[in-house]
Image (cartoon, rainbow, N blue to C red):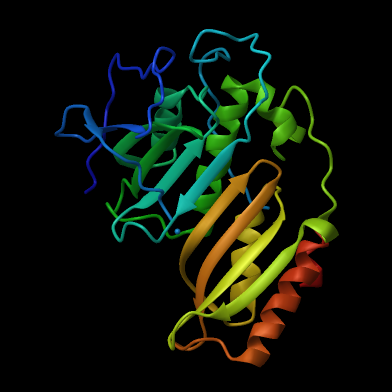
Length: 279
């Protein structure tokens, strides 16, 4: 599976594509030519982090940088559930998402291989999907700090190529042209834990996004001896939405421990400036 995918002189252009009833999907694998499929299946699963920056000037892929239409909501999804052998990342920014090659090169600079890439266009926009493995092991990414580095790298590239998205991304505060409005963390934070079979529970978290959030979530969960088995982490504009499959000693979390977990997350998420010494 650890096969590097190289795209040479290859670009995806959709400015003249009309979206029909069935969306268009284009995929590339190391041994395949582009193909078309009939429908798109949605993919479902601070620290010292070096973020490679984009290497070229901001552009909008359809060649119309002065568009006056509504700016779409940027979305970055890190999915650990769909593929047992790879981490799946999906990036969406309406129908104007560019910088595919640059994003793949930035991920390679993190010591990763992109073993498969797909570009799908449907009524909600263009979806770039990457299947990623660690170059050193050929396996999916498990380290939360590396997963956070992947997320911030993609968001950074999005801001470089599409500065108009900065007001809709929390990272726009540091890297964007137009800083976003502050989100009330108390209002934005929602935590829910429920049973998901006898051997695991499902943890749902929604809160205001910020750099290092994925690492912080995993740390808070594991600090109370709850194991994170898999999940999905979505960045949707200024909000982050996480779905984790968790367990305690190989079993679903009991009701009292569910309450402890939920309260711990609410407490720390509503205090993003909490010092390490107070843990």
